[in-house]
Length: 96
Image 1: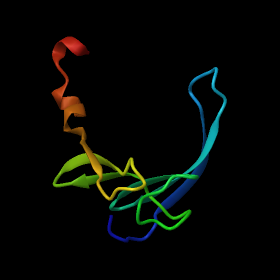
Image 2: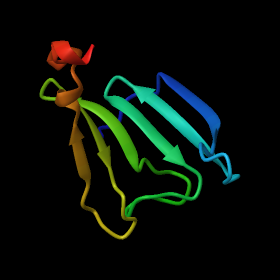
Image 3: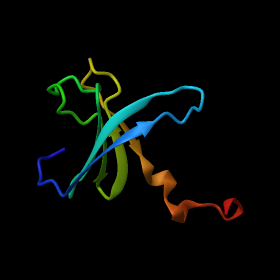
Image 4: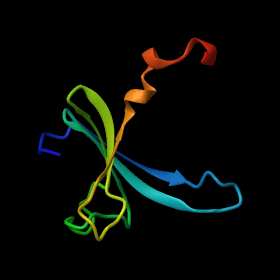
């Protein structure tokens, strides 16, 4: 993601959704005009400095909303998920 001014930064703690597994994870969401960055304590990317990382990003590229993630801290290879299939306009009438 290109550098741009921070519009909003939100810090919160995720609580495990599995009721028999008790865990919490501090996360930070940073929103800019270029996208949303999700960082989580203890998680990083191959090129990031400790505590300054964005292993999950949401961005608009060529008019398509996508999620970009770096699931392996030892690899520069990103996984890109195009959300075009989730467009409301693509919902089949029998699925409403």
